[in-house]
Amino acid sequence: MIKKVGILANGGDVPGFNAVIRAIVRTAEQNGVECYGYLDGFNGLLHNNKVRLDHQPIASGILHKGGSIIGSSLNSNVFNYKVIEDGNVVYKDLSEQCVQNMKNDGIDCLFTLGGDSTQKSARDFTLRGVNVIGVPKTIDNDVACTEKTFGFDTAVAVATDALDRLHTTAESHNRIMVLEVMGRYAGWIALEAAIAGGADAVLIPEIPYDIEKVADKVRERQKEGKNFSIIVVSEGAFPKGGSMSVKNTREGGSGVINIQLGGAGEIVAKQLEEKTGLISRNTTLGYLQRGGTPTSTDRILSTEYGAKAMDLALEGKFSVLTVLKNGKLDYVPLEDVVGNNKKIGAVGGGTKESNTKVVKMDDDLIKTARNIGICLGD
Ligand code: F6P
Image (cartoon, rainbow, N blue to C red; front, side, top):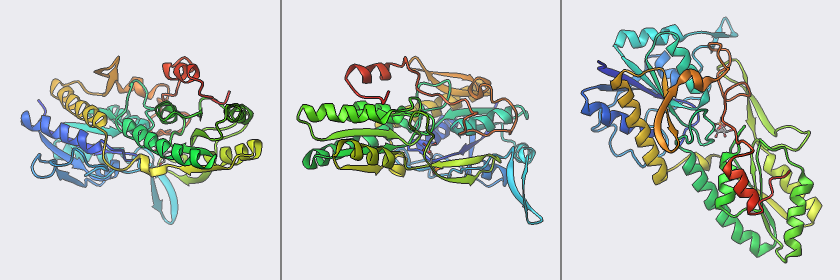
């Protein structure tokens, strides 16, 4: 019987964090379970910085709110945590401190709301004997073993709205409008937004592009009398034989160098202008995709995931991730989610080594895009 649970939100924020927290807390309260929220992700767990999450007043009135009422942290892999010792940067495994904090407070289960990096740490905690249940988050929709992560639908809605707006200005000025959207190793946001927003081309990390093919598409439209085009570019898209557009590198808490992407859209816009003679402009959608109120679809999915996670805890099913499989709520072992990234703490996530769910070439979305004449740059 579980009596007390901890919740943490980790990684880049997404709309829907609060909806998951609310659903866990509500389901918990109906079953006499006390909830605590660790502040700022794994940092809160490490420093035992937490708040009691009662339905009233804390976890109430938050369903529609973006962000996370308990914060969220980036670069906080407690299995390989950056500390300064005698003026030197060293990386330490501080996970035992977290385990002790939970033991001392009688936390029976930890809910980890996050992406692949977070779920990697979640799985590593299960190997330290902690009861963990993961909930898949990220606007990129690239967590393995689930059809949908919470936050993704909102990002696609924001990108689609942006495309609608770019369409009218592109048409008025006979321009090429490029929209750069998020999607580091997976092009889900770009692909769905391109289909929903009626784009002419979409470039995703899974298909290294040939700019000449995209220029051909624009020229083809010009021949039809359409002197404007709409191009969606994933931040992780890169040309054949080339590499991703890196804006910055930063040292992450996992000891891995994290890469901050940026500039892919600018490159495409500049090259298309040179090749077609049409004025081209890039808009980088950036963090607008991650902020603000969740769509109704995300509110529902987040609520389902949160309630399911608490249900699983009540049933004593730990070391799992709540997932959507064939459109139905389900769960899978965290071991499957990390794939071959098995070594404790070695590689956090959000990297090439992690088990990210990328777009496969036989995906229905790819087929649909091709069927309706969207150029994929190949
Ligand atoms: O993981 C989600 C994501 O939105 C990626 O698509 C993007 O590369 C990254 O976050 C950027 O976030 P930040 O700059 O906050 O690390």
